[in-house]
Length: 164
Image 1 (spheres, rainbow, N blue to C red):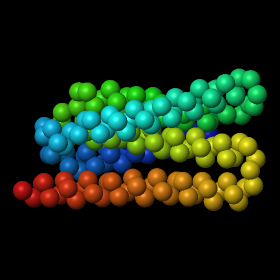
Image 2: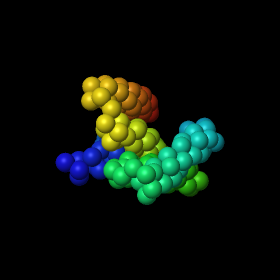
Image 3: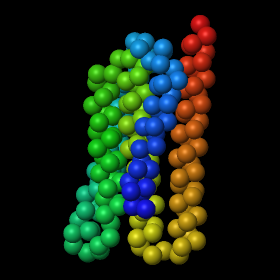
Image 4: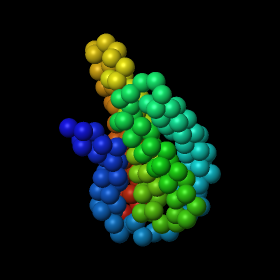
């Protein structure tokens, strides 16, 4: 069961690989500067990296000194920080559509991991189980809806590009 919880953050990688495979002929295209949109991506990623790092530092200190049982939370925060950082670095040298999709996948892995870290704390701290379950479903649903909407918009855009 623990293996399942460690695989969940990588769902966006799989969905983006499917998108890359489906539109493989367009993935070699070199993106125009406005499609790259490096500055807005960097601003978002930098802000979120700070959240991941702060959370990771705080939970690691808690685990070491006060409360045990945060291993999964630490894992999620570490993955979040690492992939936000990877996505930030990737912004500097992406130029093709497939690289943009990978960068987006890294950001989505990081944001999902951040959500999962919060969800994991709800179950460690022994909150009311219904309360924890409702908040978890809400958090995961919102992230999932956003992910699906992004995939649909990207697919529509690529279908139109493919028709030209």
